[in-house]
Image (cartoon, rainbow, N blue to C red; front, side, top):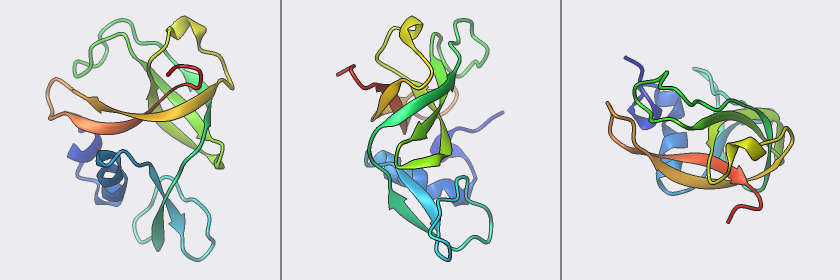
Length: 134
């Protein structure tokens, strides 16, 4: 069975999920180069820094039929790129909108939601919504 978010046994991502519980998005940066190294790898010498600001929608799909038994459709998994880190793409969900209005390069803003998979404990996660959806 797949594991999600903070229920994963991936210790490398623990700072990411710990920050999400506090409604903060943090990314790993290589200490030697200063570059963001998403996804962190074993043995990396990294600092976790807060990432803020807008993002852009790169790709998405609208899930309307139950393909993952842990999540109730409809939902929109997506790839977004943060304006502050244009070389980094995050897997996330798009929320608070009519999915038919999603467009490539759409301006997005960060928000946080408690996701409630059916077979795991709820967890806080960074998600995005269209910049005009408040």
